[in-house]
Image (cartoon, rainbow, N blue to C red; front, side, top):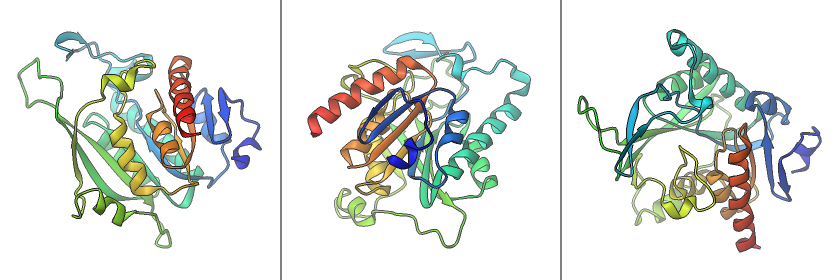
Length: 268
C-alpha cells in the first residue's frame, strides 16, 4: 500500500497489507490519496445514545453506546446528523476509485439521511439490502413492532462510465444456484467473534463476508472509516484484500489489532 504511505500518515498498527489509523475520521480521510480505495464499508454512528433502555442478554440496559454516538443538542439533531453524514460521505467519494463502491449500514434512525446524502454527494444507489436479524432484542416498550432489521445501502459514483464489480456468479453459487435477493437473514454477532474484546455495534462476520465476496477481488484495498472492532478487516484479509481501518477510540483499534494478528497468523 505504498500510495498511502507517501502521505506520512501516523499509523497505529501496520503490516504489509494492513494499516490501522487512530484519530478523527474527517482529518484522516483527507490525508489518503484521491481515488486509491476499491471498496468502502462504513457503519457510522446511529446517534441512538439518548438515555433510553433496551434489552441485552435478558437484562434491561441503557441504549447509550459511547460519546461518539451521542448528540449534545437534541433540537439540532436532524440538521447536525445530516451535515455529519454528507461530510464523511463526501470525503469517502474523494478517496474511492472511479469504479469503486461503498456499502453503508444503518437503522431507520440514520439510514434515510445517509441515502439522501449519498445522492446529494454524487453517488448512485445500486441496492438497498435488508438485514433481517433472527434474534433481535425484545421490544420492552410494547408500543411498536419489534425492531428486527437494519438496512445496508450499496452505491457507486453517479458516473455513466463507472463499471463497478459485482461477482454475480459467486453470489448465485452461494445461494444454491439461484439469484441472491436483497433480503439477508441471520443472527446477531456470535459470542465467539467477541473473544478479543467487545464493541457495542459489532457486525457479524458472515455479513461482511457476503458484502466483500460480492464486490471485491484479490488485491483490492478495502477501507472502513469507522472500523470499530475490525470485522471488515478480518473479512478483507480472508478475501485476499488489503485493509485500512480508521477509528478514534484506541481501545477499539487494540481489539482490531488482536483480531487481525490472529487472522494473519492463520493465513500465513
